[in-house]
Length: 204
Image (cartoon, rainbow, N blue to C red; front, side, top):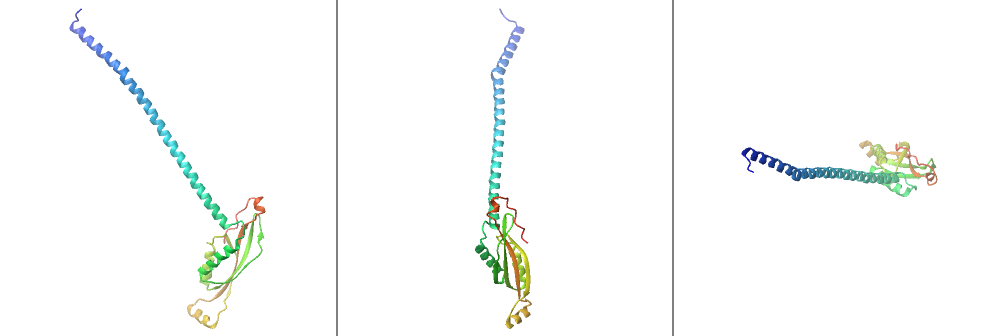
């Protein structure tokens, strides 16, 4: 049977529609599904990257806090040791006095005074020099490694010979003698095992 022109046109249009439908179902739909799966994978990858970054940040923060904690523990151990460590303190104190330009006369530790969780060790220091050097020493004592608290401070005229007296009069630097009582602290090994150790008094 021969088709007329109209029927042929209809047949061509129907064939084109069928081919288009087949192309949609066979090519486009699978591609859309693949794109959807790809988008899901991309989202999952982004979530994994964000989780990894969060974990890395947490580990870095923990490491930083651990380092800071160790530093604080070391500083506190130096300020408030478990034993008096008087020889080390005397050496550092001698260096501090020398740096201030004063003459180191005497140093007299006394018996430790027990407190709740720690012991205080009073130490009397006698130095000689000018007022400016004494003030400098007071400032340097605040920066010493041990926890140091100044409890008493007295100044007296210094003893000088005639030549030194003439020099001091010309320069205006009057020789003085200073008596300073400081306290250093140590953890009480008995009570520290039973109670929480309170902070030592703040340095004056």
